[in-house]
Length: 407
Image (cartoon, rainbow, N blue to C red; front, side, top):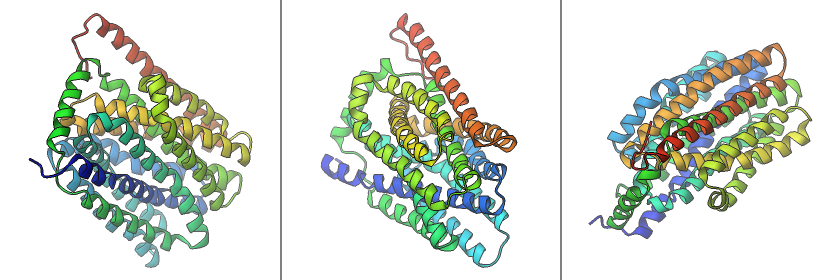
């Protein structure tokens, strides 16, 4: 009927993994490179915080609406459009710097525009995966996909920091634009064909089998969102800690984040075994709780200990993040995945704005140790609340086993 086999579909879908990695790498090279420029020029956590807030605001506002668009239109086409437009916007920064445009307004404007595009990318990519990947393969694919995203995010500091130190901002941001273009080519090569009949039948049967035991969307969105908070604020605090307070170069920042990337790769290697043993829910909640505890310790003992804690924290965070993504994706109908991820992404980034402001004010009146500690406390409370929320709803559902709650 569809003219493609399962093997052909699987082979094409693998192209989404490098595309996701490259898109994440490009987004975060842009953001972290811009943060480093501001740190060099201003040296203020508040200036960096406002940059991350400028990125978070449009995504928090637009993600729920763009999630609905991802459920109504061709998800693959939306992803390609996001990458092509991002490439054009990313070129504005090096061109503007070359023409002598005022640096700070230019940094804020280009990153704001990229954030608007990212608000569409997140739900569109999640919806495309749910559309094309068989339910039985979602856990494995989500593991690889989430690691691609997070490694792109963490390794962006290695690439961006080293390139900024040795080549300067203009070549760095030009390279960044090329990453978006390459991602668009890879997603385009996935093709327009949907899944063959046997995958559609398998997905329908699996959905019916799991319909009575899915988890509520609300606490899963809370877990997903607090993961965004931790990653985003960490990326804002780390340059201030290493460059502003410890007076290390961008290359050191790159090495630290490269270790974080290695931690995520280790997480991908063990996730399926951990999830089979503990279950996705326990892995998600427990991983976030332990990871945020380590988060508070990171700025206390110098660079060598920081490197070890970042590696371990990324290992735990990676598994928790993958588990949360899998739970969120399978707790709604395939036709509503874009909406679900749009809501979760919007909530997470709205929370990021609040936490970023709090961390910026706390750090500005003290130092980054207290900023890290503040974020850790907030994240622990969020994970604890999500766990209590799920437990309460599960106890109620135990008395009504045929009722599925998805709020």
